[in-house]
Length: 455
Image (tube, rainbow, N blue to C red; front, side):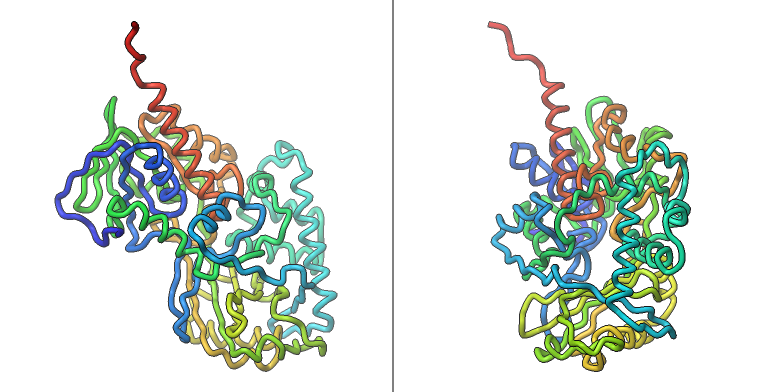
């Protein structure tokens, strides 16, 4: 059972302290424990799961309000879901998309506009073929303006703002190209959902670790000596040989390191920024799945197909149904448009989104049975958006610096989805980063073990 709430004046001695109970931290702790290392996991939030989270909707169902989707390109998270005996539900990911202008603009042909979004996506994929060293410090927006114009450019900029939760104006094209290279999709990225929630998989990992996981316990200071570390958290002191810092780069500065981390490492951590995204889950009665007739398209279209909008830029929707008797739409809005919507109250956000859903799905979309929103904004824990993005063009090597920090920073290893060898920004990336961190800790321990006595 996960221990809820901070301990009072407690001291624990373990081999490895893990800071952060997202998928990266839980994976690292699980892997180390499986190899005989004693561990403790300390989490500032009152829950585990990082950017995965769940809630109960108006009909009493438990739903994912954070990370939710996975696909066949992600072996680690698929293996974990299978090991826990959870159920994958496939979406209708082969269906054609529809797109709408939104705002006060009339959409004449949603399918034709969707093809414009597709062409914009194709242009952004060209980054994979570009020599990243040739991009210099150009922003993603600047690079796109050299490839597209008009509505195609508008859709590309808006779509990428939604995908990265930050304006392409502040994102270095070279960093986006690096992330794309580490994200080898061959399937629809939203191919599956977990019927019992993806957040439940994180809870399963924490439950297996039991009372080694301490939530609502913020780490304040990490003090290092030549042979060990002390991790000072709220009401808890952990003595350890190593510490895995499994939090987003933007949150590293919230912890005091004594002695301080090198300026190169700290500058690399400060190079990252979190954006904003709002996730909505809208449930309907069973008749909804066959009753759609989008405005501008008289042909009923299954809810599984993606809908996108030019305004607000970055809004897209699709099915997140796990039970045929409970059709559910998921809507994501990321980037500057999400920042704007965050200034509104929840009533205005709901009303505005419902109007857009009526445009995309027809009049029946006006009458949901349940409506849940989760606003993910930057905070001191590095939250907000799907992950932190590098925005400092003078620190384009920040990912590599943080990955190899263990070579120069005694007893410290960093692990987060942003550093994942594959699929940065996804649960798969967090898991691969956690596995890599555990491997680094084990290799370090092996290299410092005294040789066996001679015979």
